[in-house]
Length: 411
Image (tube, rainbow, N blue to C red):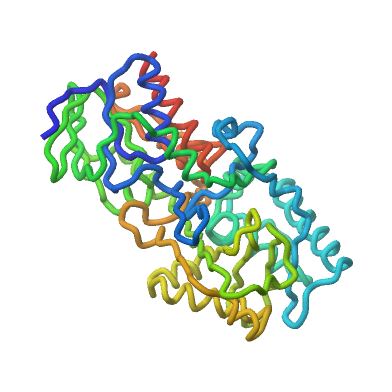
């Protein structure tokens, strides 16, 4: 049993929990961070499983000039400066003229979203261009592959509200390594899953297989996927508007996979070149690829949205097989033979996360602020990327949310 009674108990040692703990300690408040898993960082996690830093989750620091983690980045590349993007058209790669045409179609597609009337809120898909050579593929890219959910599932108001700009920085050491370094020295207890939280006063009591801890206030930073699945039981039950906010901010899924090269073939691709496939009639929704980061001998890619969920339910081997097939569709047998050791992330099935990051369902733009609203006079707070109305879905949003709640509590 934990016997200390801190001012604040923080549940979850991801970006929001780490940021909250750092801000509380800086303000002279005592805190304990309880983390169910056996590592820090949450959805920001770097390993060397492929022989070089590989981010399993958060990969870029978006809108870097305003990103609170940018000062910690070290060696990096601004991925927006890498112009070599390749588009496979089914039997060949697009010409420069076709890439320009595709780029203009992307601009027109996004302009239609931005210029659409904000009221009433509705699905993004209701205001996007239809038909033509490119629009189905653009919708797939902006939905499943960027926002981890189809545009038919995403609030127009929220999409516009959280649409981020560059620079998009890719750190060589990995985003997860940055976050882990910032957690050093904090009072974090790993392997301490919280299963029950009492907030009926005067303070809070959290419980788990490890025992019981009392504190003045609780900051809950677990994902909305975990909250919606009942991963923590609350006494009393959360208010209806808080529960509605949780369900209105579902987790999308963006499964990341990486392959180490099995030979010397580099397919004519320089480091950081990216490849996509055009979505064709009746074809499986395509994946995306980035080659040889920092000159390493691996490449990585993503599959998102409904297809990612379906593959996750089948297991990592299904995602690996689908990725190999996607690569072979572009590079034939030569490509299939070039992919060696593989890693596939498990964000969709891992009970500590149950998804990658949130999107707001149509009509739920306000749910981010509602979830962030103090309960019981501030005795119970929620923080994380789901709670940030500008940087949702990113490490920046999680960090800023946790920091803001901690500063509010510290007065």
